[in-house]
Length: 205
Image 1 (cartoon, rainbow, N blue to C red):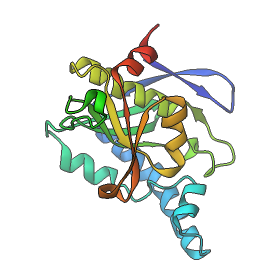
Image 2 (image 1 turned 90 degrees about the horizontal axis):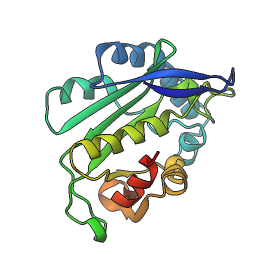
Image 3 (image 1 turned 30 degrees about the vertical axis):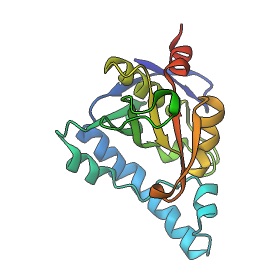
C-alpha cells in the first residue's frame, strides 16, 4: 500500500498499486477518464486552441493515448509491464513500462533499464484541466514503482523516458533525471534517464 494526499480534504489516503492493469482499470478509464479528455480536446479544436501549447496548458497532452487498446494488445507480452494506481474506489493513475530498452547515458550506456512508455493521471487530478485537483502524488508513486521494478529486475533502479513538455520540469527538477536532449525519433521530445546513484538516493529511507 502507498499514500496519496487528498488536496480537497488535506488528508492522506491509502492507495494500492496493481500489476498488471486489470479490466477494472480499463473500465474506469473508458467511463471516467476518456469522456473528460475527449471533451477537452473537442473544446480546444472548437475554440481554435488545438495546438501543442494549448494541449499542454490544459494538461491533456496524453489524451490521444489508447489505453484500452494497448492493454489488450500488450497482454502477456514479456516486453511490457503495466501498473494501475487505485484510491478512493477509482483508478487514479496508469503506467506502461518497456523491459527491453538499454541506457544511452555514457555512464550507464547499454545497461538494462525500465523505460516508462506511458504514464498518466486521472483527469480530476490534473492542474490546468480542473480548478480543484483531487489527489497529489500520483506521478511520484508511479515513477517510484518503475524504479522499484528496475531494482527487482537487477537493473539498479535505472529508468528512462521521453517527457511531454508540461511534465519536463517534474522529471528534471524533482527527480533529477539527466536530459540527453531532444530525440528526433520521438517528435523531438526530450529524453531523460535516471542513474543508479540517483535511484539509490531516492529509495534511501
